[in-house]
Structures are given as C-alpha cells and as structure tokens.
Length: 138
Image (spheres, helix red, strand yellow):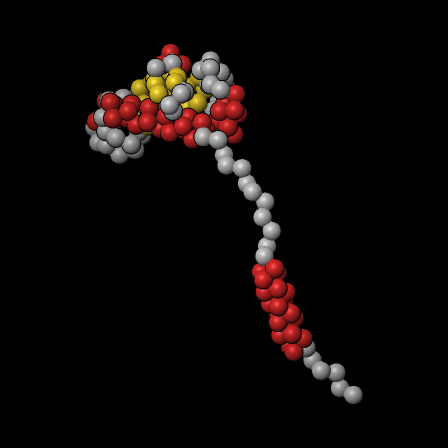
C-alpha cells in the first residue's frame, strides 16, 4: 500500500511499470539500457473517493488515456531505479493534489472608497479625451 494522505492509500496492484529506452543524448549507453520508466496507474480499479476521482479526471485529463490509466513517463535520470522512484513520487504528488479539496471562494464587494476612486479615474480619463478633440470654429 502506498500512502497518499493520512487516510488515503492506494494498492500497488493498480500500478504497472514498463522499462523503455530513453530518448535524447547519452552516448552508447542510451542504445543498450532501458533506463526510462513508464508508470501506468489504473484509476478505475483503484477505489479512490468519488470527489478525488472527479478532481483527478479534471486536473490530469491530458495524462489519462481512454482506458482510464494515468500515464507517467520518467527519464530525467540515468539510472533505472532513480527514474522509477521519480515516477512514484510524481504519481503521489498528482494524487495528493487531487485529494485536496479546493477552498470555497467568498464573494466580496468593492469598498465605497474603491468605487469612488474608480469613478474619479474614469472622469479624469474622460476629461483628458475631451481636451484632445478639435474645437469647432464659429
């Protein structure tokens, strides 16, 4: 079991890991060693709370495929083990962000002084633009 928050844990059976060859520079080593990690987390069978599941669907919608798998590619490091740990850390971070409930926004009103400042500035701009106009000849 992997701990996400104090009361949310995920089962490791929902996670599958594939090791692939990393792209980019690396000399001869990059052609021989599969050091990049592709982690797949099955969101459908993970048993996540409903609110967390819906937040995850909206926050990580570009990372979730049509099967409902959250894909994480890790190839920052040269070693396979460090990339594996990086992928797990990123998965926990994504799930922890989805577990946080967003704060409710409290509606506020502008103060009377702010309204007066705004109207005063509008009037000042209006006067500046009036003074730019041509004066009609009589």
